[in-house]
Amino acid sequence: MSSDNGFDRWRPHPWHGLGVGPNVPEVVHAYIEMTPFDTVKYEIDKETGYLKVDRPQRYSSQPPALYGFIPRTYCGDRVDGLSPKSNRGDLDPLDICILSERTISRPEILLDARVIGGLRMLDHGEADDKIVGVLDNDNIYGDAEDISDIPEVLVERLHHYFLTYKSVPSMEEDKSKKIEIDYVYGFDHASSVIEASIADYDEKFDQ
Image (cartoon, rainbow, N blue to C red; front, top):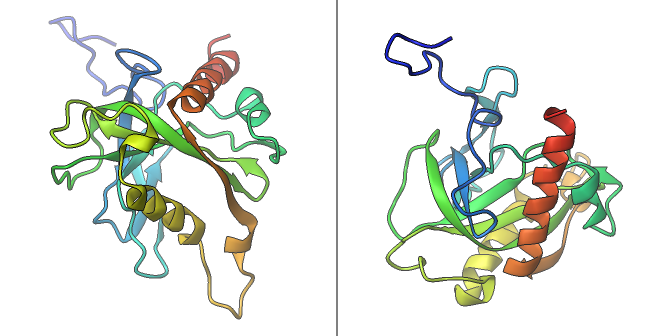
C-alpha cells in the first residue's frame, strides 16, 4: 500500500525489502542486528522484520564488530557447496561483520560495507559463513580490499568470538565443540559466497 505522496506507508522487511547493495559483491548493504556493546543476542524476526531478543549471552562475550546480515541472501545449496565439510546451508540470510573506526552503538541500521573476506564456519554441520567487511569510506579501514589488509588481531578476535559465543558450562553438553572455523578467506572467495547466497535467495523466494 502506498501513501498519497507515492511512498510506501509500511517499513520494508530488512531481509526481503531492501537491496543487496550498490556494487555487489565489492560493496553490499548490511543490516545491523548487534553492536560491540551488546550483551544480549539479537536477531531479526523473520516473520515481522523487527529485531527480537534471541538470548542473553551466558558470559561476558561481546561481538568485536558490528554484526548483521546482507539483505536478499540465503544460505542454501549453493553456499553449502562451497563448504566441503557441511551437510547443508543454515537456511538463514548471509551473516556479515563490519569493522568501523568510529563507534556505532545502535542496531537496526543499514550501512554500506566493503567486503574483504570471511570465515568459513560450521555450526552443527551447517554452513554458517561470516563475511567480513569494513565500513565503506571509513577513515581507517576504508581502503582495505582484502582481509590481509587489516591487523591480524582483529581477525583473531572474530575467530575467537564465533568459536565461544555459544559456550555452555562444563557440566552441560559443550556445544562449542560442534562449532568449527576451518578457513579464513579473502575477498575472492567471499565474493563467491555472496554470489552463491544471492542465487540461493532467488531460487528460494523469487520464483
